[in-house]
Length: 441
Image (cartoon, one colour):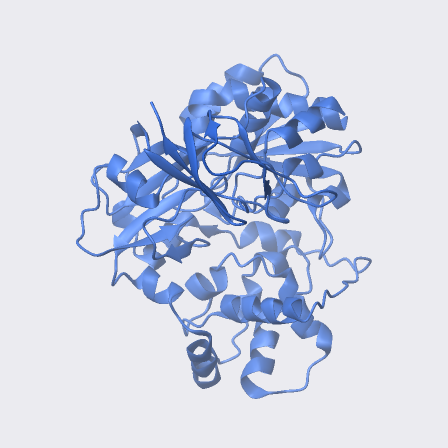
């Protein structure tokens, strides 16, 4: 269809963090499309900003997906606590009979797409499957806004993110893709600590970034600046051998990691405590127990909140997945067996306030009212900012480009996403991983 072609050509990918190419996600047999505005990670404010300031564009993008997919219903999921955003969106959709709001409690991980599908529609996504398997599509609100802008012929060249923590002016930042992390921090008044450490993404699922020259990507939701000795950095810096050693010493098989696991509460056969038992004690277990690590969403609740011994089943699951994938092993899951734990899912929601307390980031939870824009003199645009293969360069060193010009295309017949220039300038470097553009007046 023409709109799907437009989405492909403009490089739209999932902006919530995963980066799945959106043109490959839209199908013609959908029933419900959910606009994900839950923003469950602590400290982040960019989705709330987009809904409040550009809600009409988000709704227009949602309507476009409904039209293309034939879905009969669009649902915008927002947390109940965001009363001003809710009021704004209600005014926009009041005359649209195919659109409605779903109001969520303030818990983590409210924005997980499988959790959203269950709570908003009552449908349970089978283990190992995506929401598409039950006729649903979940799309981040910035993705939907990008879809609307794609319909106007505008490629994805900018990213809205939150810069918070140890910065002078915590802000929502509208930044050119490829801008350095340092430039974003500087735009927010600079760091307030001498040796800052950076988490890219949210504090729960984000990763440590040690290079301040690393570029902003299409999927970067946040830049969290912290003191280098902060407990969150210590947790995210644990080595796998240390995690295994501590697990063998301290795992008491209390089962809390399983009882609070969002995937387990959805009815999936993921039992983190059994995986830990096998890893720690070398016990013989059915292979499906180990394979179930693939079902882990790596939300981090087990290590941050559930485990009384402060161990990390999440890291163990991540290591298992990597090892199996490196061996080119992809397990198959029994989707016919359905276990219902709906009441447990609704009754075991972990309040976001408790997550902030455990992570010791409460003092950074300030209302972000400042909006800043970057104006970089140089951008470094990565060719893989998405699930799939890296984009293939179509420019060479010395070429002049304008914002929105195509820099790299999708490999023939493969899953990927196009990449476009985010500033006007001259290409100063090209390889198979990145393209650097220096601004020219």
